[in-house]
Image 1 (cartoon, rainbow, N blue to C red):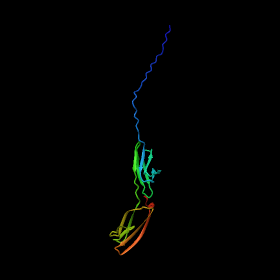
Image 2 (cartoon, one colour):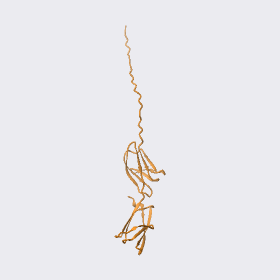
Image 3 (cartoon, helix red, strand yellow):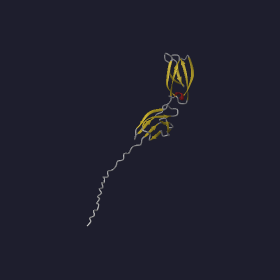
Image 4 (cartoon, one colour):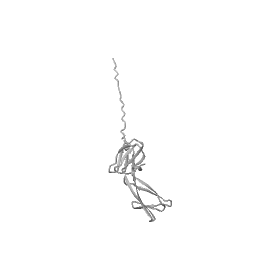
Amino acid sequence: MAKYLLPFFVAAVSIPSAAPQIRSEIEPTAIVIETAADATIYLDDVRQGIVPDSGKWTIRSPKTGSHRLRIEGYRKQPFIRNIVVTAGQTTRVAAKLAEWTADLEVFTVPGTAVALNGRAAGTADSSGHLLISGIQAEQYGCTWNARATISAIAAWSWSRTWSTRSLSP
C-alpha cells in the first residue's frame, strides 16, 4: 500500500497593530517682505517683482541658506540686507525705504546767517564754517535756494541743484 504524504503548509501572517501615523506639517519655506508699494524686490540680484499696493511681497520656496536681499523704490535709498533662509520657516523682513538726503557745507565769513528755501539753517562759526546735514532731496532735480546775511551789512543768494542719482552709494 502506498502512502502519500501530502505537503502541509502553514502560513504565518503577522498583522501589525494599526497605530495612527502622525504626519508632520512642515510650513513651506518663504520670505515675506513688508515695504513700500511699487518697490522692486531683488534676491541675489535676480528681480523677483514689484510690490503691490498692499505693501507685502512673498518669495515662495527660496533656497535655504544665505541670500542678499535688495529693495529699490522710486526716489528712495535702496534697502540692502543679508538674510538667512531656514528650511520650513518663514523669514520676515520689514524694509523701510529711507529718503535721499544730502549735506551742504558752507564756507563764508564768520557769523554769517544762512537760510535754505526761506528757513533759517544756521550761522557760520568763528572759522566761517557751517555744515547743514540731512537735507531731504524730495525730487530728482532738487534745487535749494540759499541766502546768506552778514549782520544786516550785506546779503547774497545762490542756488544749488543736485540729482539723487549722483547720491547713490
